Image (cartoon, rainbow, N blue to C red; front, side):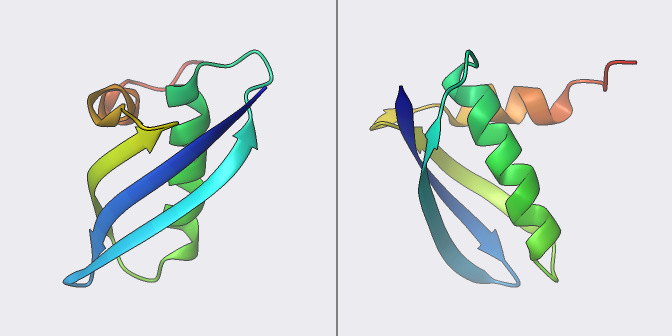
Length: 74
């Protein structure tokens, strides 16, 4: 099953939108979105501020932000 993920964020004072379609592979949509967000941040020369995240039309911004704030597992 695939999920369509759409990110709205601000980078270097510019509003940016990125989207893509990804396989879930036994993961929750917010986990897949968080992996995509990490990839986006690696590609950007400037820091990005997350504004909104949608997965198949559903707002999952808070869930992704919680994953970003969570401590890394050992």
